Length: 509
Image (cartoon, rainbow, N blue to C red; front, top):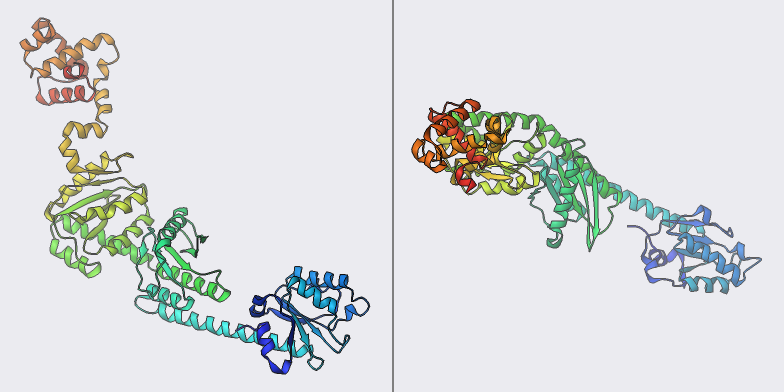
């Protein structure tokens, strides 16, 4: 451990004593150095935190209070911790003016007896500093070796983080690429009142998409967060709590852990690509009905597949988002046996046991993704579930980012068509009759006729026109629109277009 003024005073062969006690805490502060100088102003060559020794030659001609005060003030401003004054060399005793000047600013003043060489004091301090540095180096090397050994274990990443906690004596927390906390069996936990702050800081770091560090120092919480991974996509964040700044050994250890974690995760990139392809293959096996083969393969790699009935969720990120798939890998691993995912035709498909589909909602919300969910299905109905999820996804919007197919079905086909942008298609169909206000009577005639189930007499009476006039207008409307209104399909298409554009007679009432 470093030497202090207190340990110097306890060293009997040195024979030092306190002439001015000074600040009590100064006695236990580590000494950064000890040096001798008789210059009137040695401060240009000094740094803070040390013990300055002098014979007092600078006071031989002028030991006035003014000179002593100016000298001590210069030392205080420079951050010198204490002054040691030799008696019996130049001055029989320490000048009273120096004593008073040290007492005024509470700087400890040590009496150095004539028989104690300055070099003995300097050697005492330098040897203690060397021992302390050697001890810290050995501890650092020991910690580095322990972390390296931990990295060789099957659960290498978790093992090195647990070792880091033991070596630093503080809590550590790991967050995956999605910003979710990774549970690690360690002795110390993140303080409960700080957990949300640390999680939010980790997500802010990941959101930047590039390597970085955040230092938290607020309301009693002190922690350092650093990203894992030296290039995009980032692999996670390591958070280390502390009562203050880490020393150099602690900082080196954290850097080593982050480097080892980054290497381990980067090396797994190829394996993860293979795993994604396997997932896609298993999904195709499930679609083909080879459930037993798919189940046994998935169980060997990730655990059991979700038990039916299941709900299919579809997400279609723009482009190839490797970060998202890596986050989903971690998410699915955390919920083994409850969630399975795979990539298919540029989309990400999540299959969860009924009721467990809600597990993905916070994840999707953080990722800012639109999603579509099927209704409950059995594994044998997987194709239907995929189709329902795709259709639901198509109707999702910024105001409703997660759409559920059962809700669309309950609202009816017209509602589904409307939400899917059917009105724009309907207006394109009706465009030949929308340019001229005079054509409004054609639209009205066709709408009333369809509302009366294609019966001419009731429709003509409702319009107050002759049935032949009605036949003529409906025929013209059909020709202008390119529809054969003798066919049920074309009648249905026209009625749907009029309904979506609010042009049916019922809408005009």
